[in-house]
Every structure is written in C-alpha cells, then in structure tokens.
Image 1 (tube, rainbow, N blue to C red):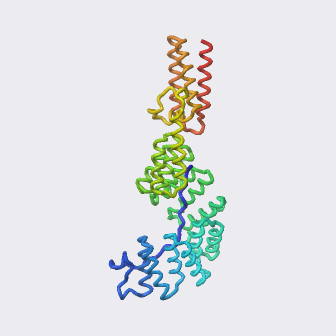
Image 2: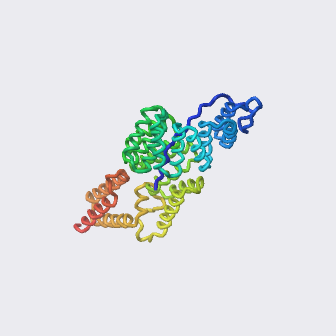
Image 3: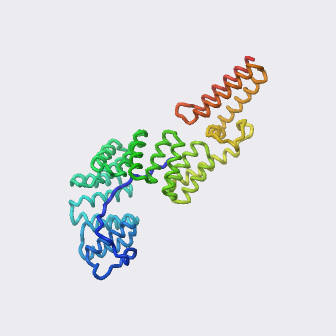
Length: 385
C-alpha cells in the first residue's frame, strides 16, 4: 500500500570550470574563441548543472570527436542516463572503461545504470570494483548499499551505509539512505533519527516523505500526514507524497481524503501503477460502504463522522453491528435502571467511549475486542436487571 521513495544514487560530481557566456548558456553555441575541448567541456558541465541535458550531450559529443576522454565519455553517459537513453549511457560507460580499466568513477556510474535497470547483482559488482580500485568517492559504498537492500541483504547494506557516512559525514543523502535501510529492518526509531539528520542538513520532499512513511509504519498517522504536508509544501508536484498521504488517510478510514490524494498522485504520474491500484481499491471501499444495509449501520450518522474510530466502525460491518448491539443493550439497561444506578451507567459508557477515542490507533488497543467485551458487559447487566 505504501511506496517508499527510491534511494538517492550519487554519481559523478562535476567540477565546474568557470562562468559560461550568456550567449551560450541555453543553446550550447560557443563563440569562436571557445571551441577548444577544455572550453566546451566547461560549457557542457554548466548545461549539466542547469539540467539542460541535450545541450550537455551536444557539447560532450564535440569534445569526444576532438579528443576521446574517459571523463567526458562518463559525463555524457550520465547525461544520457538522465534522459533515459539507457543504451547510449551504457555504451559510454563501457567506452570509458575500455580507455581506462582502472577508472573507478565509470564503474560507479555504470552501477547506477544497472540499479535503475533492476540488475542489482551487476550494480553490486560495479560498486565493488570501484571500491577495489580504491576510489575516494564514498558514493560507491552508498550505491552498493542501495543495491544490497534491493537484494534483501540489509546487513551488508547497513555496513556500507555506515562506511559512506564515515567517509562523508556531511552528505544528507547518506543519512536518508541509511534511514531507508533501518526502515527495511523495521527499526523505525533509528530510521526516523537518520531522516531527521538528513532533513536538518538539507530539507527535501523525499526525506520528509521517507520519515512520514516510518511514522506511518508505527501507526502514528497524524505525524505521517504532517510530514507529507511539509513535503508537498516543498514540492507540490511530488506524486509519492500524495500517494503515501492517501495511504495514511485510508488507514484512518478517511476515505474521501484518501481518494483525493490518490487522484492527485495519479494525475501527476499516470504511470504509477501503485497509485492507480490504490485509488481503485479505496473507491471500492467507499462504494461498498454506500451499499451497507441500514440495519447493520452503527447508531450514529456515518455521513457526519469526524473521529477516526467512528470512521473505522462505519467501514466495518462487524464493528457496526457490535456498536448497534452495544447501544441497544445500553438503552435497555437505562430503561430498567433508575436514579443513581442509571447515572452511574451513563458515566461508565461515557468513560468507555472516551477511552476508545483516545486509544484507537495504538498498537496495544484492539477495537473489536474492547467493543465485544463492553457489549457482553451491558448484555449481562440487562439480564441481571
């Protein structure tokens, strides 16, 4: 039901070599005195930094024609990867490795390619080769951790996450990635601590969403929703936050808000099969409730229900029937009692409802069990009156 955000895979960090002339910033065109490989490489890096990948690819290609270079081939591969031209990205990484079989960065970036293609064994192998080559790039450890996690080897993933943080303690991504590893291990408190650190260093919608997911796994739905709200303030088009906020509202049995969030997730990313399936499922839940026999509905009006526990009762026919039976026994007992005994019964019922509202949603509180126990108490009271 919930969709954890993909880990942040860290590739090549380009060193920018100078200011790009304004005439060339968006077009990739260069003045006559800038047609040297070094100048074109610098301009390509600026295009890369501006996420103008077609511009970057064009300039990198001109450099490669003039002087094939492993770093430029690797950088063009990264630009192809960003445009999802996966075959061309792989070809560039292979060419860079052929030029220099000891070029660790190309193995790191090819590992990212394999990860994105779902070949996690090869992703591990490439990161491991970069580490064997004594790379100074801590991304090799963080990226291998991500692949290990996909292979359900969280023990190895956690060791690599720790090493990445040891080598680069200022990288917010690495704390976020370790948080995801802890979440996979169901250690949500440690996961939240790492997400807190990532957010402290660099607030991002993905970090907030990941922390919200951990709160949601702890059934702390209100905190989860608060994190999704904050994520969407940072990035109003972040579909994953809408999907996961929809899951939280569904868990709170607020089906209308769940539907609204799933609809927005699908609107932003129609290819997200999980959001599409979630939307269909929660619409079926709502349609099923609309067809519930009036005689099995609870004694209160579900259309005006505000509390999460009331919505839970409305969404479950067995809970609704228990609530009706409990209310019928309560009303019958009031008829048979009088004075102080009737007043005491009213106070007991108010206390039961107050405790129910307060405790619902906590792992230790079993709503159906508590309602059944209270109904049996009231039924016994009616028999004894």
